[in-house]
Length: 436
Image 1: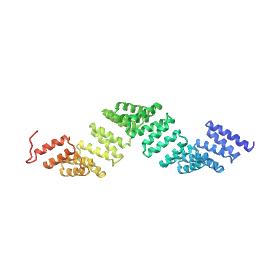
Image 2 (image 1 turned 120 degrees about the vertical axis):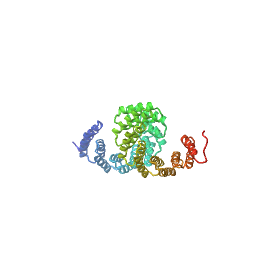
Image 3 (image 1 turned 180 degrees about the horizontal axis):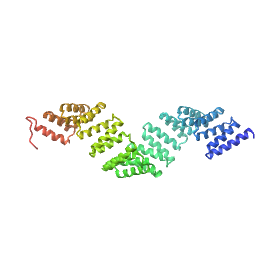
Image 4 (image 1 turned 180 degrees about the vertical axis):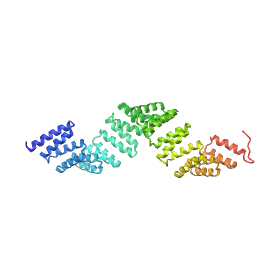
């Protein structure tokens, strides 16, 4: 067998094996062909492609470099070398290879697309968009180009343009479910809930068994106050993916909206069994337990949250409120003291701290806490109101009246403040008013 005949025989064998998906066997055949004709660049190229299929990326890089060493102007080899570099996350080298390919052939739309992908991996989103657009000028119906352009636009928070780019992808691929799904997510983010629901429904027409889509559909239905339908959607997500903690969590939220508190608690607990380190999950569970007057259970949930993040302001605030409701005022004060040290510009924390100190009969210290809240937020009507109550308790009824009036100036419909003002006026020397 001559060198040429031997090389051609093994090359044809390798090509047929590769076409049949037998890439490992094809590589063996291509290597035999290379032994016969080591300078035949086509064999090196086909061998490199087969090596890529078997995920032997470093060997594929060697093959593509051999092609280039033999024939430097072969643009497909530069493109494939770029793809090989991208496969091992060497995106800078990939871009260099794609640029070589484009110097040789500016009309390779897939090379522009591949280059865009590498740039996107490097967070160079503007440059990636330019690369995708160069490819799309050559092939306007290339759905993947529009799709990845949309991904880059999304990273830049150019959501409306991203939605339009997904729409362009759908012109040529109307059943492109991922494009419909991503469009729906962006519409949801933009608050266009009806349009988002239409898109989620379209995805489910194409792929009815995707749990994530049922989950997202449930979320948009809840935003539209279709709580029963939302619950049905979450239940379907859970049927498809019973270990999806987010579905159990969102199901708990909609059950709360339906005033099915016990079921909501059970759903949150199921979510937390699956994701026990969810800070938000423990806080939300604690809040619903608190609202249902299961205060000891709520306290336990907030304590778990604080083992996850001891500086969590929502957990500290909720724990302080629960201790206040339990009458454990010293413990509540300690909790609020921790909270205001971490977040000294929170008017609500200073206000809540003042209420606790009031319960400990430390009126002057409570006033100082309300003052701090009002320095931060002078229009805080409830802080003026509580400050007035404390002043009345101290016998300073005239000042209390002034505080109630400030609360009423901010909120004229503040019934309790109006009632307290009338009572304080009756106690003000020389300013008694007739009962109304």
